[in-house]
View: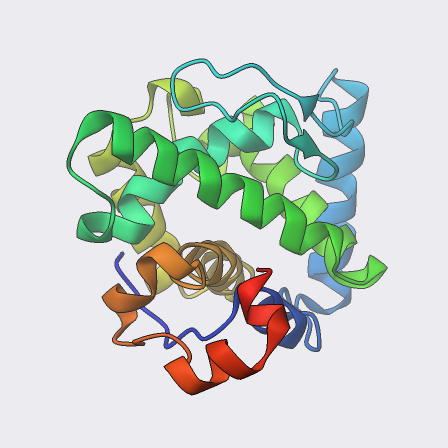
Length: 212
């Protein structure tokens, strides 16, 4: 699912994403997602941001504080990013873990700056994917996300991409858009999207580039 966008700036592209609705569900879809989210909450799924998490496996440096993504959301993206980004991720294991960790932090930071409407939509989408019953019956992902292989994650994304159900199509778009912007919008990965970075004269002339 290596759907590479042309990305120039993570912050500006996340701002562009926030100008439109991710999940154009209609009334029925909104009611369905709302019901799933409420049921997930009643079943013990937490909507509390993860806060500072220890660096375990692909987990983030505890110096970063999550303000939107929950612990379950982090596990979701740890499973999905290798399928979404594909060969763009470094091959060396430690560098790969760091790239995934940093991308998830930037996803969290980007969503934190979204407006309430998109935050609400994404929270409901993540709850649908994290809640065991709907993960199995709707996403058709049988294992919990920490146990999902890259091949299984890729198959899930392909099912939603090609589904005849608009909610699933839009869910696929939301997951891949925010992941690609967070990955390819980071300076270290600009070259993978064909962007050489800002011209040297701009870096030299504008102090904000030097302080970035």
